[in-house]
Image 1 (cartoon, rainbow, N blue to C red):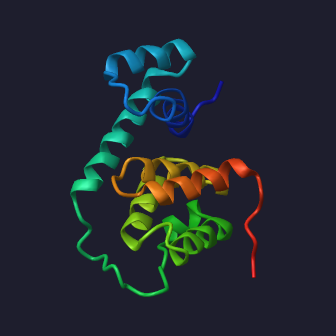
Image 2: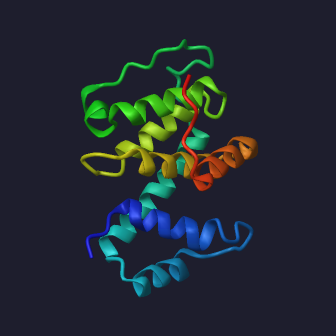
Length: 159
């Protein structure tokens, strides 16, 4: 089975964090569960580093990001390679509709780039958005909207 860091993160999210967010779990027990589920130690380690880096982002403001930085985000070539037009458009949609603020958008992009995948499709992006929102206090409404969007199965209305 060819698993990626994102596969490990999704498994953690669905089976540990999302199922019972109040449960206290230590890394060793989660790691044992991941190994038992068939994930490689290397990918498990990378997933835990990814999660720790996400927690670190919460405590470190990105100084170049202003809450009112404007309507356009210019993507560098590495970001353009990983995020296709649909994904970039979805990020813009989320920001324009108040689901993400500019700082959260940057956190999502940072976590996408940390996945070490050559490309990230729209479904993967949605999961990363959900994980970023889940790990930030005060984003319950945005998380609920994103969760309902993902599991409703209805495409977004475009105008």
